[in-house]
Amino acid sequence: MIRIPQQVRENICVEDDGKLRLDLSNSRTAGYFLHEWLHYVHNLSTINGIYAFASMVNMWANFRNKIDNVGKSSASKKLTDYALSSVQRTHLYRMGARRQRDNPDASVVSGACKVIGASITTSQLAVALLGHPPEYSTIIHCELELDHGRCVRAEIGVVEIIEGIANMLEERFLMLHGELPDKQKVAPYRLVLGLARHVIPEIANDQVIACAITSLQCDDPPLALWELFHALKTVAADRRFTAIERLSLRRLEEYRALIEQVFVQTEQLFPLAEPMGDEVKRLVANMREKFELRRTAPFFELTMLDCIKKEPPAVRATTLQRIIADFSCPRIELEEIGRDVQGLNDVVNFGNSATINSDIEFGQQKLHAALHFMGLHLSEDGFVETVALQASPARRCCPFYNSCAYDSRNTNPEVCLERPWEWLNVPMDPLTACWYRAGVRATRPPCE
Image (cartoon, rainbow, N blue to C red; front, side, top):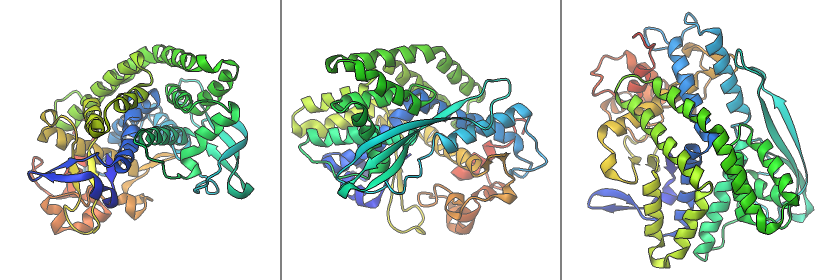
């Protein structure tokens, strides 16, 4: 889901015949939206993003076996050793490689951002999947020189790569509109470009973007990025992009059979036809399609922006909207100020409205709720009991607290705010129950 804050909503959302629609004619707010949409693109079309989604769904499938007859995680319910190692391994990877690095000294806006030194650390994950070899993850360590000669340290992990790509593409979009990009924080947005220029001072931005996207087609993106930058040092400038493209296509072909296996296994977790399972299968089908698109156009993001650049300025907003709609777009939550006002935020689907019906919308929210409920219970040891949850109040809150229109949100808002899973124990028609209750209900063990 893309969340649009109120200050952006005011410049990107218009009402047309009583319905909300996006207006991307303001290039700066369109650039903001493009940046957020690109995260969805990379989750949908890169090996790193595909694995992240599949692993979350697989953890949810294991979590179902921890749920008791009142819909709570219980100590009396045990996972198999294999399932437990799978959950622990995935959680450790997400908390290490998939989280934003802690870069307090570099999380500042600075005109200067020069990497003056870099190294890598590759570590073995503390937990390996039973019967499988150990796995490793890499962090890139950078020494930076910022404004006024101030030197700081920062780290590059997967999140910094993803943010670096989106930031460079947003800047490219703004510049084709004749806009100068605002200065962004060094971390997480400018580290990848800084590292690239440290290794290859004259490397072009599009080549950096291509390298970063290619790294996301590997099981250890920071290591892949590091090795790719250094390998390109000896490649002539006019041959670099072709070299990157060939490597990306080779990686995609190497992983093709394994990714298809991941798709099939994910689909098989949902043998019945119902909204949540149908949404997972719809997402998998979309991922299949976009993975195949990568195999013919590994850096299609650059092609998209080139298409927009060729259009007259007056129709560029329409072209961007068409590209996003044709590719697909996640749900969009349009935020308003006023946390305790029911139904204040609007949740909309952008794209081909003919393909979105009420069952699909319900499945989207139900899946979101189920994964949220599961995520509250994750720990290094597996899944904690619901009665022992350590999640912060902000994390416990129903993710739809400000967009929900169900009666239960109005009658007992404190439940939605503090313990939304408890709606499962309130008798109501499952066909009219709220999204979160439906997600928790779906998380009960398969036999129930």
